[in-house]
Length: 268
Image (cartoon, rainbow, N blue to C red):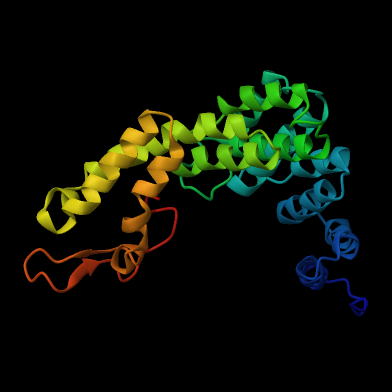
């Protein structure tokens, strides 16, 4: 992208900075925010430039900018995220709990919505990334295994997505035994919740209820293969795959979801 025409208008530099950010040109975007701040203090520019410094690994500069970025949620979260990154970088194993507590205090109440960032979710992601970079024969380095074990207790929520995130992380670093340890209780809880659904108490889905019950027995016995085989037929049903259930009244049609709203005001 060519440099913008000379201008003393901070708004022109801000617009250019945003354009450069969208194109992934971190350095030009940073210099454009420099020009905005040269014209006067601007919390938005501090937040943007601080984030760019953090992306480039210039953590001291990032800290200085983010300290002046105001108290809105984006600024508080960026400060918290930077603290988590620094805590992980300063440790060989589990990070010191002090910076993590400070990060939580800065970020405020953790959202339970599945795709929102939290200190616990960020910490887990960073530790998995580090463990994946220094794998040893047979799985993660013992330091990383211990750190990841400790980080499991740092998750703020126990939603399906948070527990699934742990499973994926363990699989990524080759610790299938750890993944199985987390997956077993999650699968059993999911089966129990499914059996509590009113639709499975009627005759139309009696075979599905029986399959889930059989699968749950396999899970309790520590036999995931038999549990998966028990669920094969229900999982192959086209109506259930489209989140629909047979209509009890007519016996021919189905009832289900045509559309779902996806946002922080709706539970996952």
